[in-house]
Length: 136
Image (cartoon, rainbow, N blue to C red; front, side, top):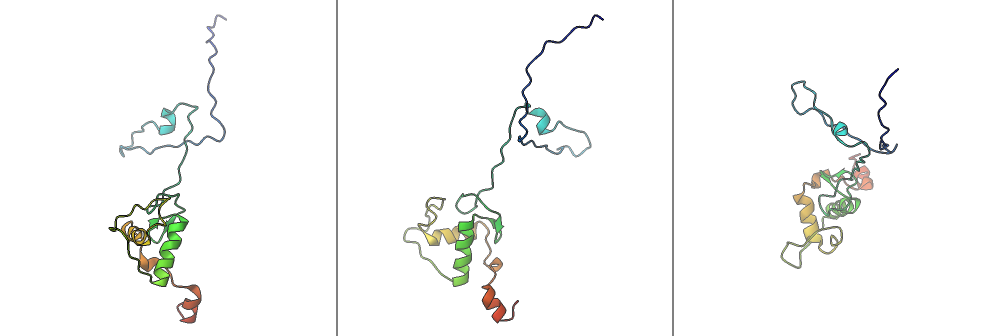
């Protein structure tokens, strides 16, 4: 048989731990559009980032009290609400609240918690106190 052989071309191999994703069709009219994984080169790796805390920008560990928050901001907000503390800013109430400076101003940190959507009503009372008062 007189077949023409194609030259061998090195093909990149997708690593077994590679993550791919597909996007749904945006038209909504039933026509299929190529998925994102089809458009990507076969050796492309997609990394997923964890969501960021809405208060300080650290890695969020879920939605707490109505906002994406790290464990530090979650605990700070809960303790502030439990103890009914009020804080006063030593500056102009516009302190930078980020991962490295979140402990510098409690007043601005608490204000930012409220601003990003944390609800004081979502903080449950102390478990022992709730049992004592018959709430649980």
